[in-house]
Amino acid sequence: MTLKTLLIAAACTVLLAACGNPEPAESVESLMANPDRLKEVRAHCKADHTKVGDALCNRASEATRRRFMGSGTPYMAAPPAAPASAPKD
Image (cartoon, rainbow, N blue to C red; front, top):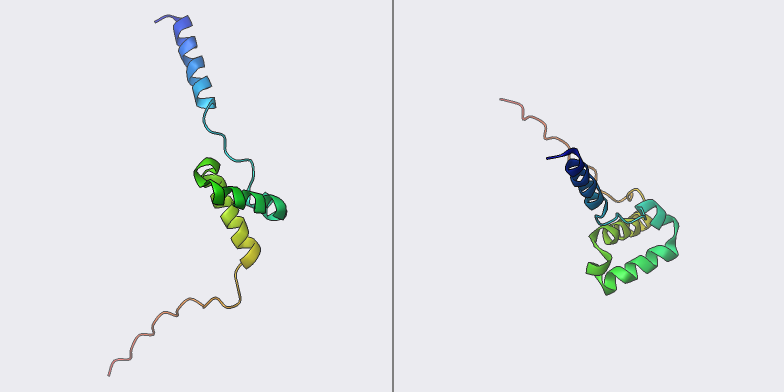
């Protein structure tokens, strides 16, 4: 192979790698900060989940959960304590 052929092959590989599906630009935090956009994304996900995509719908779901629950609730049960070893008779 010549150097020219290798350079063309490398350029094609780089271009094909750059043509992948772009990640959604909206993060969970940006959706939480913009309730109108969150409502819009949730409506789109409900109408046509496959068109919107799992990544954005999952972010919208997580943003909704965080807006509702915050960092947790005071009603969450504490983790169970380790069982105490039974005294031997």
